[in-house]
Length: 141
Image 1 (spheres, rainbow, N blue to C red):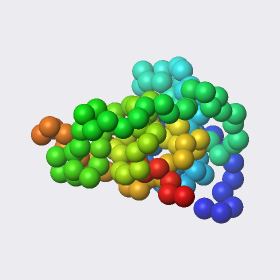
Image 2: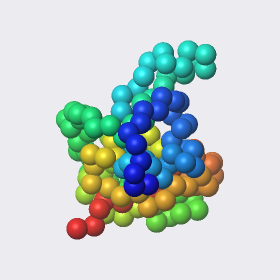
Image 3: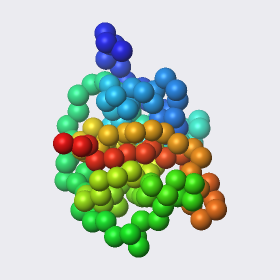
Image 4: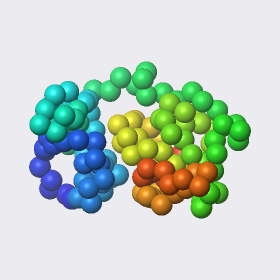
């Protein structure tokens, strides 16, 4: 991946799942920037910018403020060591173990002190399979 040229990719959020794009996002080679409204009118979807180019970040909208309370964070039926967090803004700042988050976590990943451990599509919550999740953990110091 060294020697990769600067690029800009415009595509739907599902691009994050592609086997050639996911590792670039995980290794912070590509970042997801602002959503590109009306770039994909044929698909009737909002596009996203995936780029190697530097960008400025509004850190205020990316700060985490929630604290962990077991009643607020269920665990997966088939992975009780992982808590479910369906929204980036609900990631508990004081939790040190594994957290399942939506793949849209990549929007915030470069600015947060978390590492991506794996990508799973087999997790069940209350008997129902949830959409694919990134399994993250606060970086260990």
